Structure formats: structure tokens, C-alpha cells
Amino acid sequence: MSRDFPGRHWFLIALILLIPVGMLAPGFGIAIKQNGWTVPLFVGIMLGIAGFTMDTSQLVKQSVNLRAIVPVLFCTYILAPSAAYGLGRLFAPHGDVNFITAMMIMAAQAGSLASAIALTMMAGGNRELALVCTLLSNCLTVFLTPFILRVSIDANVEFQVSEMISRMGMVVLFPIFIGQLLRKFIWGKTESIRPLIKMVPQFIVLLFVYTGFASGAGQLMQDGTLVVRFLGACILLHLLLLSFMTLVSGLLRLEWPERTAVILCGSQKTLPNGIYVWNNFFQTNPYGAVPLVLYHLFQLVVDTLLVPKFKKRNPDLDDSADGADMAPAGCHGSVKQK
Image (cartoon, rainbow, N blue to C red; front, side, top):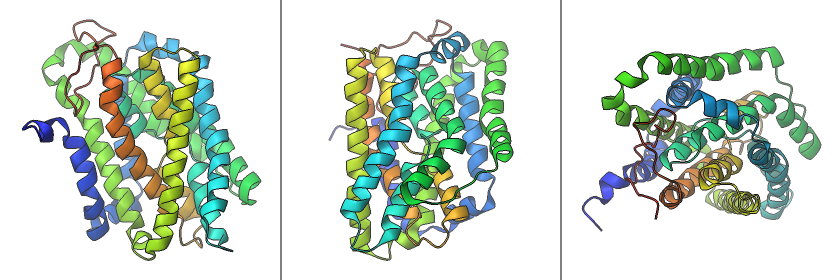
């Protein structure tokens, strides 16, 4: 092992270390989950940073990039729930309906707002496309998540649309707007601290991982056999989604920055919204948090390992050029395209 390994891979090391910390010392994470404002606050901070570091013209351009957006939405809301239902039936203990329900709670969710964008930035991918894909995915969740749960497991989930729109505006759109506004006035003055700014989303992702494991610690430690079943289903689901998005993005001949964003956004699932659905509509399901936490963990570990591979294929961006200024200081060091 090289001496610079910890420095280059600190994010992955921290990610793995947070697993036992969340399991053995869940108190702080449970408090974060229960207070109701900490997770939205940190999501807002991360999206504000994303808005600050993104080129406005590219955001407009990527918002109509249907060749990239449509496969992400298809994978998120059609392929993922369909595959999860089949895997749920395959892995569920005989007669245990709670297993399939828990799998569908996870699979019906939107893409991750936090980790997909953060990892795309770390990999030097198209962060504007990643933001557009995750925004659209999360805007559609108010309609598509209840529909999927109704069709698959005959569950009646009704979101308060006005409340969801208000929350989306405050937690997502407002921080991005503020970030874009600040970019216009102070971007040129932040060159010396940009590496630190770009690391903040990584710390936020780590906080979410700890919170997720702390929230599911009780369920994860109850039945080892059940956890193995859920883990097997989650691993196969994520690998299927990764493979599908890799294949489709290649067939569509997307450039690697776009492919990076599409692969990560199309294969990830959000944890906070899933916990919200479980707490509010499936409180009697004892497994609700288990696949949410396991899938979230596995997607972060595997996708973090993919970051350096994506980074090799993505061109380095010149920080001196406006609009090509966010080749983030990833945890894997700088690797120039060969």
C-alpha cells in the first residue's frame, strides 16, 4: 500500500468506518433523523454549493438533454421498481409480505439528491446534467412514488402536493438559486478556497451515511439471516441498474462526462425520502429501514470505487476558464485523461 493511499482514498475509508460507528453509536444519528430539519438543511447546503460551482449556460443546455434524461427516469421509476419486485419475491422468506413491501419502499424512491451529484463532481462528470436529472427525478416523486406503491403492493400513499412543492422549493430550488446568484458576484474571489468548497458535499454524504445506519441499527442487528437476504437483493438490484445505464449510455454514444452523470443518477436511490415514506405510511413494517440503508450503503461504496475509473475517462477541466471550472478535488487525486 502506498503512503499516499489514505490521503487519496480518505472518503472511502471514512465511509467504511462509519458503518460500525452508526451501528454501535447510533444516538447522534437518530437525533439527526428525528429533529426533522438537519437533513433538509444539509441537502440545501450541498445544493447551494452545487449551484455556486455550476455554469448557468450549461444548466440550461442540459435541461433539454432528453437523450440523457429519459434513460435516467426510465431506470429510476420503471426498471428499478420492476426488478426490485422480482428480487423481493425471490429473496423473501416464505409467506413474509413485509419483505417485498420494504423492497418496494426503497425501489419506488427518486434518485439521490446528495450522493449522485457529489460523486459526479468527484469523478469530473457533467455535474449540470446530474443536477437536472436528480431535480426532475425528485419533482416527479410526488406522483410516481405513490403510483408505483399502489400498483406493486396495493398501498395507499398520498403526499401533500402543496407541502412537497413548498419543501422542494425551499430545500432544493432556493439554495441553487442563491448559489447561482453568489457565483455571479464572488466566483472570481474564491479561487484559493475552491478545493475546500468542493469537499463539503463529500462530508455531507458521510453524514447521511452515518444517519442512515444509525436509523436502521435496530433492525440490522435483529436478524442476521434477514439482513443477508436484503443485502443480496440490494446488491443485485444496484449492479443491474449500473449495468443497464452503462449499456444504454454507451449505445446512445454519450460523452463520458454525460455517461458518468447518467450512470450514477440512474442507479442511485434517495435515503431521506424513503425514511419519510416508511415513517409516515408503513410504520407497522418492521423491515422498512433495512433495504433503504443497505442499498444506500452499497451504492455509495461501489460508486465511490467507480469514481477513479470515471475520472480517467473524463477530461480535466481548466479552472481558469469560466464554465469549465469545477473539476472537483476528489478523494482519489487528479488523474489526467489518457
